[in-house]
Amino acid sequence: MPHTSSNSTNSANDDVIATLLQGAQTFRQREYGASNSLMRSLSGGQQPGAIMIACADSRVDPALVFGVRPGDLLVVRVVANLVPPPDSAGADAAVMAAVELGLNALGIPHLIVCGHSRCAGVRTALDQALGGSQPGEPAPGAAEASHESCLERWTAVADIACQEIIAAHGASPLDELCRHAEQRSVLQSLENLRARPWLREREARGELTLHGWWFDIVDGTLWVADPESAAFAPVC
Image (cartoon, rainbow, N blue to C red; front, side, top):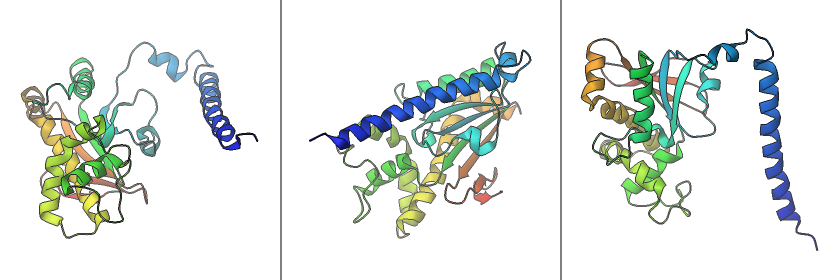
């Protein structure tokens, strides 16, 4: 008897790769066809207007969400859009290398940390802070991450934010608790950025503005943190 399930899986995987290759071909034809095309002009250098630290989640593509073209936005995508503190034994190197490139080499004036709803990374951190999965609410990837993993070590960066949210909103429904934790972790990442004197000084001189955003993937609403109160409010 043929292994139809395995064959179907292999076929689906092949279709994904074929789609990506076709996409690359279409992109090249569309974006490199003319001698004065945008992509040809960008081959000489870049000058993005903002850096965005965003989540690796496949559902939240900054270029699609914010309608930008290549060259407009320097994007750093990591699980749960986290920025570790300076004393994190090198865990911050990849994120901060991109930040240094954007600020020091390119002189970008805006840095945005953008979180989102239903974030599996923040949920992992929250679950760890709660001491395990809640009844009937297994954390995404809980079975795979039952041992100490890179994911758990990375999302531990959000532990302080999660502990604060549990202390303040521990009686709230889980969905609401997750939303608070997602937004608080954005603010924590901004605090971790400001913990670096060179970056804080750049902000104080007016050469850099930090922004905290949160995108609701359920209805497409963008929430922005007020610079003074740090409270999030929907803007569009």
